[in-house]
Image 1 (tube, one colour):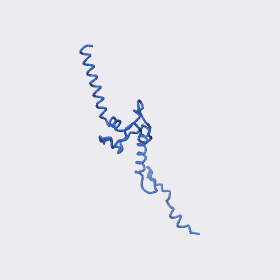
Image 2 (spheres, one colour):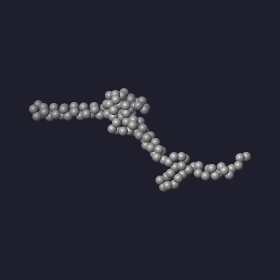
Image 3 (spheres, rainbow, N blue to C red):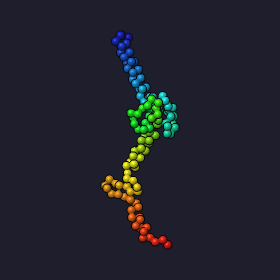
Image 4 (cartoon, rainbow, N blue to C red):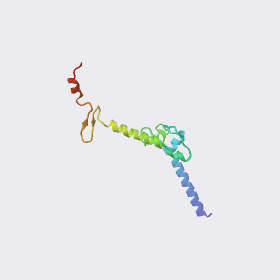
Length: 127
C-alpha cells in the first residue's frame, strides 16, 4: 500500500468515526441508549434491521426540546407514531370548531340540530 493510499484509508476511517460520533449525539441515538427497544404504545420489541421502524416521538411535539435525560421522548413504532400525530390533528380540528351544539361550515351555514326545539316544546301541553 502506498503512502497516498494509506492517507486515503486514514481519512476515510476518520470521516466514518466522525459520522458515527455525530450520529451517537443525535436525539434518536440518545433515546435508543436510554430506553428499551420497545414501542411505548403497542409494546412490540425491535432489534436488528427492524430497529429502524422504532422512532422517537417528542411528547410536547417540539423537536427542538431534547433534554439529555430523554424526558420529552418516547420510542414508538412507525404505526403508533403516525397514529399519535393523526390523533392530534383530529383533536386540533375539533378544538377549532365553534362551541356548543352548532357547527359552522366553510360556507357560513350554521347547523344546529336543536334549532327551534324550544319553540316546539312550548306548544306541547303535558297530558
